[in-house]
Structures are given as structure tokens and as C-alpha cells.
Image (cartoon, rainbow, N blue to C red; front, side, top):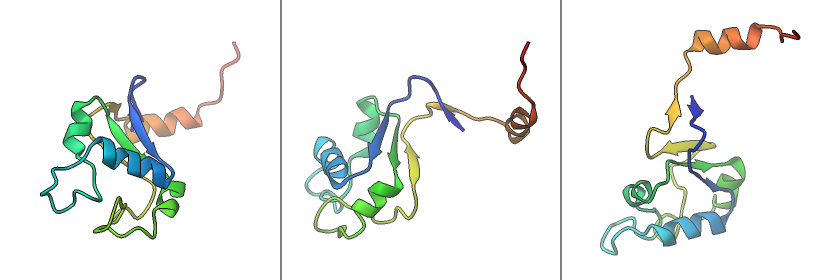
Length: 106
């Protein structure tokens, strides 16, 4: 899977990144997860294609509780959440053959 060239990906590497995301795209106040989770649909509607949570982002947010503020509860490893299909799939055979071919100098 490869992102398209103009893909807009939000990167979470710090607590501030997650806080900003939840504040910018809040869920309705009566939603159970309104303190901890952004409104993914609103984010996609605003033009974002994906959210990437890095290892640093997971570590920075590891001790945050889901019911008290922004949290990455349930995100267990660096991951991409695709909000819209802004990527192309590469067949495994094509990817493997591309890696095996020697460079051309000529």
C-alpha cells in the first residue's frame, strides 16, 4: 500500500498532536467518547485522508485514560487509520520483483 502523492496525513507524535486533533474535530458533547476521540467523519470531510500514530506518539500518550481526556486507548502499535481511500495497492508479486531487480545504469 502506497499513499498517493497528494495524500494529507495527520501525524501523532506527541500529546499536543493528539490534544490538537481532538480539539479541532470534537465529537458532540453528549457522545460517550467526546473527551478522548476526534470526530473521524468531520476530519475526512475537512480533507484529511489518514491519521498516522507513530511509536513516539503511542509512548507519549500511553498513560492517558480514555474517560478523562484525549487517549489512544486501543492503538497498540504504530498504525495508519485511513479516513478516505488515498492510496494505491501494490500486488505482492510486483513489490517483490521490484526489490529483486538490479539497478540499470544505462
